[in-house]
Length: 307
Image 1 (cartoon, one colour):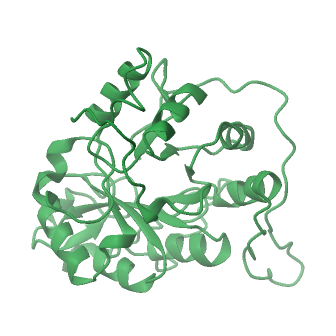
Image 2: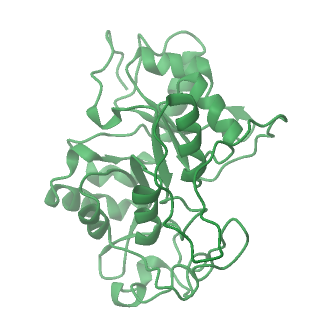
């Protein structure tokens, strides 16, 4: 990790901050990591970036899924790496989803796991943050991004650097790993990060809290910006937390509730409200993004799972 005498050049991938990043497509509003979620995030809520995860199937297809098994999100069971694409593509990826009202609103409605190549092709004007969840997925991911000529709009992130070793040499945006971020965090307290130190990456993707450790603070954001390194924070669903982070100058927020973030960006950044969902059936209300009153009570931080 080099000492740098001057700020790194900014990557255009991060332009237009603050950015609305749909975590797994907006996992509270539609089944996570499905085309249904991605379409709603982009077309209804105006997401700038889709965040997603990839793994390899038994027949080496690159599928969009977070967990090592399909048990939590689908009506199937078993390890993704042990199942062929012909089997995975038939699973109901909305089977276990519950909407904000607690209803199983997507069971049997055709939500399916997509291939990474399908997502890249379906959203040619949308940026993507992708994490290979296992090391064998990294090289195929690199090949598919290059085949789609999508290097400028796809950021490869990784909690563990070893999971993306096969993507070394990638010419597109590169997110800092957990180890790189941890070193930067410690050094910024000593005044050694920012203007005099930066990881070999184009930006950070961090939780605000890591256990009891406050990872994202105004001081951390200032240090990162001094090195021309944008900071994305995950996974933020509370409107009050969104406002506070936007006030701090965060560059992007990953959220399961893009409807709430759209409203916060409208309020604080004068960003136009997106169209929201289409009109409801007669007699049912239409849900649109609205400004939510700021919280009057503090939010208790809790550990957040990896994005």
